[in-house]
Length: 358
Image (tube, rainbow, N blue to C red; front, side, top):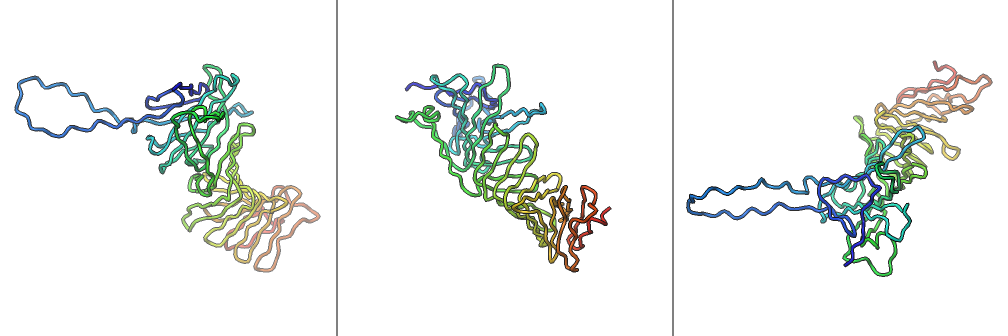
């Protein structure tokens, strides 16, 4: 059988064990030889034969890693790392299918990562560690001596396998490399970890055209806190690689065990800083409610650890609310307050009116 080249020259690839190159690149594992059964032999006067040190199984050392390298307008390099955590053909595959002979010189390479084991395929984007069963990574070739460039990632549930021969009549890149990949987007199979926060969705797509990684939902959200979990959801997640921001987008709801319910059209989320920034949109203003108290503002800062909120008045906007004592927070007045105005709100205390804020 004629074997087609499948080596991606433009990929930043690190492997801890030898690979077989041909129509595809297969991660090989070698089991250690079985020890011979014990025998009883008469003493010998011959010198003892030399015994080589046992080989380290490839499964303990082998790893497949690829990095996309994105250079922002600020000149800073930001890297997206993709790793197959498994090491045997029984749980998945890794392969690179390079440009074919009849394709343009600038045609990208296509890498396939699949892993059904618990670790899955691990994708690191900014603060987020994402685990999926299947990832297809497209990356352009770069000049010799230069590190790998940016590209595209599509990741979801699904499987991939090597084929004995390229299927007849199919002209797509993977078929020509005798590889079959079957993405199957499924709710809850894209698992995102950011610090103490866990999120799940069903499909991830990152593209170099705008540097945004989008995870389709519905997104299910949970954060472990000392006084009980913070839970919620949104329509999707957007990770802005250039600006290093993670944003929950669309009908975002955060609910604490203490009964605080916070909603917004967009929420910038930073687990390391213990803060969520609720940003109101015309369709869905930012608001936070607990008991009989409800606060609305252009921006609400949520302290994730302390379950406290701070209202920030957007320029030209208002801070309003309803409270148990029956005194609503005033809106615009003839004398606008200083900008920005921060109004702290604690779970058991009423909000301070913006005119009295320090």
